[in-house]
Amino acid sequence: MQRYKTVVDYLDGHEAWRPLLERLRAVLKESEVEETVKWGIPCYTYGGKNVASIGAFKDFVSVWFFQGALLRDEHGVLVNAQEGKTKAMRQWRFQSVNEINEDWLRAYVDEAIDNQKKGREIKPQREKPVEVPDELASALAENGDAGERFEALSPGKRREYAEYISEAKRAETRIRRLEKIMPMILAGHGLHDRYRK
Image (cartoon, rainbow, N blue to C red):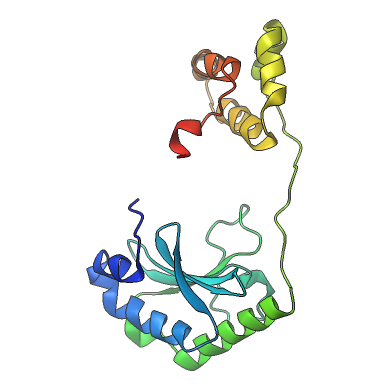
């Protein structure tokens, strides 16, 4: 996924959706939010806190509200794009400019800003216990150094390794994955560290 540096670059990179993105952007910019780019996409903040963002996908364009679960959603337009993963974020999807009801959108944006002013937010659940699958637990127990290094990793990195093993359906795949990750654990690296630059 390309990371754009400016909103104009983002619009240029999504020419097919540009009219829709520009209309949504115009409505958002009428409010008290500040426009910026985060994660390579247009983001709208209030008081330094994320309020909303716009983005183009294959089949639609969306406005998503970072604390959308707190919105009243009087028109039933918001969806949870990652059911079971996302608690607070909600998305409003559009496929054409004609689908935008600017009055409704302004009301949703104003409510999101008001919630931000009041400090209302759904905080992410932190420090869920890491459930280490049996195969990984056995391998770590057999190699004391790896076990110590694993425990020294952040909970997020331990969780990535645990999920990587437990997601494999076949025993052969779990064994292959264990062989791959044990040197990484011994080196004190996270599973996805090479991508975090």
